[in-house]
Length: 87
Image (cartoon, rainbow, N blue to C red; front, side, top):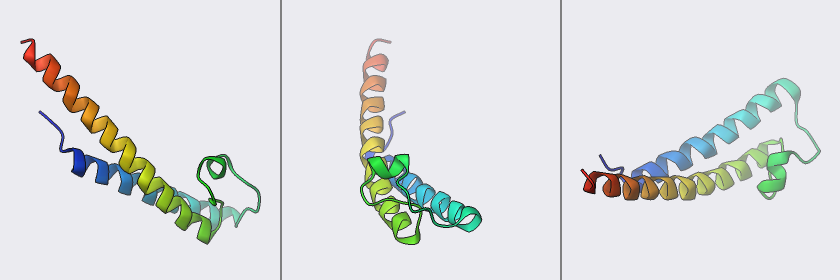
């Protein structure tokens, strides 16, 4: 069974971007906004634990998940077709 690359990539992008945004809101709700740079803030430019930082995290996470999901689905389809050919 092959994966639809576009659908899988879009799903990964949405899950990663929205997940990062909601986790940021969760941290803000219980601990408040943090001024310092986080580890994810070093990877995703302009991300921090604030409302605007969560929006930057949503954008960066969406595109990161989109690219990662597309690569994963493409590689999965490639390997499935190679292994099914040998049977």
